[in-house]
Image (cartoon, rainbow, N blue to C red; front, side, top):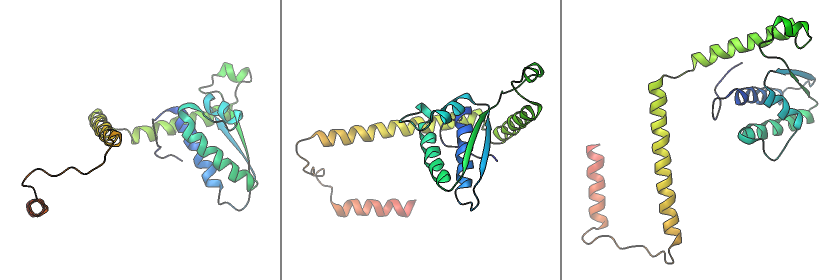
Amino acid sequence: MYGTMVGPQTVPRSELTALSRLLTFLVPLEEAGTIDVYTDNKAVFNGWHAGPKVSHGNLGDLWSLCWDLDRVVRDRGWTIRLHKVKSHATEEQMAQGLSSPELKEGNDLADHWAGKAAAYHSITEQEKDMLSWVYGTAWTIQNRLVAICMSYLSKESHEPSLPKEGVTKQKLGERLHRTQLTA
């Protein structure tokens, strides 16, 4: 399973998005059971085991969604067990009992396919530059609109100002009509 996600593209957000999608998948299922979920992400593992909190930093939006979904699936009889696995486990770490061949293979496959999906959905530097420009421009426009609203709201009187001399509704309507005809 892979797909797009909201917000910055980080490993913790990706792992937490996957967890929320699993929980979403479980909601309509009739038969409940126990699901064992494996993650190599410490932030997700620790956050899950810390339980619902007021804030989980920059992952707060996703944690809020996960906790809402978790309540629903638990009410429907599901048990979710989240396990931490060693990422990129070596033979020596497996010999020490920090991982197993099965967990290593599962983690390696997950990393492999995550990389394939990321490459498939990657964008060029030119597209990144364009998006940065669009976001920057939108931010500037938003700030200007907020400043205009704040200026308007700070005035004592909200009487409408009179239009410039010689401007009438008829003239504005004619200008709009001409604009529509030439567009």
